[in-house]
Length: 134
Image (cartoon, rainbow, N blue to C red; front, side, top):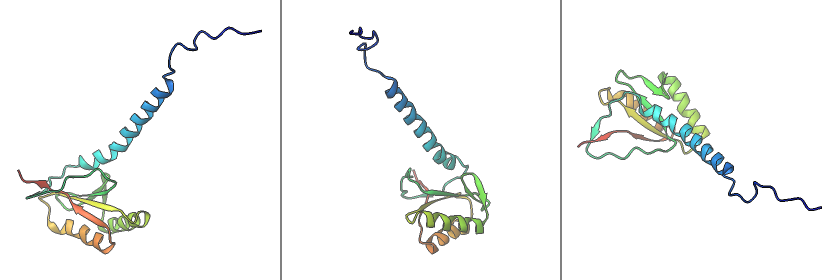
């Protein structure tokens, strides 16, 4: 005996999988961009230079240097020895690790220079964030 075709077959395309994929992509991008935004929202006044490179959205380790010389990564404060250990660990996990140094323009140069020296010693690529003069 032949069964009659189901009424809901052939009424249109099933959009449920498409909607699921769209929501998963939306959640992925929301989670992925949150960390970078937290680093760039730290209140650091960048120094001005004649020509600056654009800030990239790569997987760089962002080290913020506050006006009073404190080191912050992901809004957590680190002392110099802990920062050195963290940079060494990051280099071991990823030999191509890069560091973006965001030093407050009003801070002493020695704080940012200390991070630059550690990066040079550990052979970590680094760059200094700055704003281009208008």
